[in-house]
Image 1 (tube, rainbow, N blue to C red):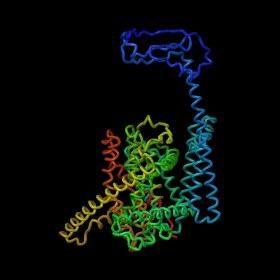
Image 2 (image 1 turned 120 degrees about the vertical axis):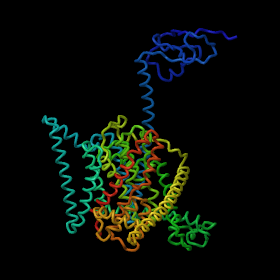
Image 3 (image 1 turned 180 degrees about the horizontal axis):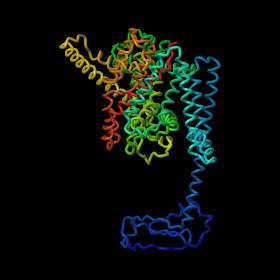
Image 4 (image 1 turned 60 degrees about the vertical axis):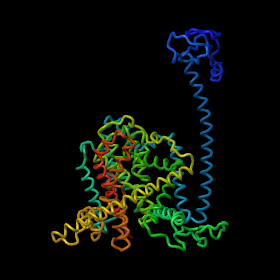
Length: 639
């Protein structure tokens, strides 16, 4: 029978030892076993932790007993510092090795880009642009720890503070300098707008439309006295600056025209898979077919739609919607590789530094440029529970004001300009934050988000994918779910619109109004808005019809109707561009339920708040899209 012993603290002195010989390794080697107590010196003892047995209880010698070391605070600090220094040295070596590898990759890539540019610069221009952007981001990342104060935009405010404090009138000096800066920027923008449009003053109608949208948002504002006009100014400035870069500079036009061409070419490769699945037969004698022996003459070299011997089906669900799984798989792969998080983080950092918005809403707004209204909140899922009402309103508005990458592919395949779709999504992101802060200003304090940098919110998390193949497969499955969702909505909305249109025509005929349709009502109700956006006078009724169709049904039907008008030459190039920017957003009635359901599943305790602000965010999202169309109308040049 095992001998029992009392659980009492035991002190054994093994003699004093020089503290200089105590290391973390010796500490681990001297860990006591059950029933044995060791001491590092006369002042430190091992004492048992009585977590299971109560004090005074008797236990057998075979019982598992945990021990902790009772040391002085200085000894604890010395041991902790020693461990920390060891881990830091190991991390530094690993980090330096990663830096060397990264710089080597950049250097070799630079040599390749240089060689390609020397051989054919026009063909290598997209590669040169992307490599230049990558180098800029690398320099920023390496310089940020050393020059963080200068990179904290706007750094001039800190300089103004030091200048004004020396004169004893800090507040007055800062206000004067800030007012002077804003007046100078507004004067510059006004001069450029007049200079670009003085030959055709009718284009300035778009400027009046933008002012009307701001005034309308102020009327809708829940707390008019709390509007932060600095946030509003910077949001509109970023919107205008990006639009001017794309539509008024040759470099910006070439970059986005190249991006549009690259996107269209890339999406055309989806026809390989579509053709293989949906064709009644896949003949081996076509230029696109891959022969069984893999002969080079039969290997595909161009998209299948260009050289196919059998015409592709003209069904919308095949030729347009089946591109979505392909592009969704591509986006999912980029997320798994970390590229999308990096790009979104940089855009969010710019908006947070300039507009002064919180890290969570900036990250969500940047995510909405590339992903959908229910996917972007996943970037900030851990923080949804504690968001203020203003932040929640801004996140919902951002979802309404932009489109997802998957449907972007569908719109491009329908014939919509990819370069304008890309620039519209980017321009609408700061616009959504700007107008949301007018309609629902911040009056609360989110303690978890106060003074937190967007980089802190962008913590690496497991995306749930085992590898790249798993990410691509899951992305394709998600894309097919989106396809089924779009098909269901198209069937439902087209059928309901046909029914409502029949009833409108019927009731009109009862009072001798012949030819009255729902689309005619859209034309006249939205005619003033189309005029304020800057559409040509002869196109206002048609653009008004598109705006009504987008708002009541969805933007997919509106873009489909717009492409039909374009084929029939019913819209001028200027009206086409304005309509493209105005329709680029999920701000329709059906999306209200989508957002409440999607975000409510992520934050169940906020479903009531989401329902209360859903209509307001829907209207604000439309206003953001229309403001982007106004700026496009100001900056677009048909020549």
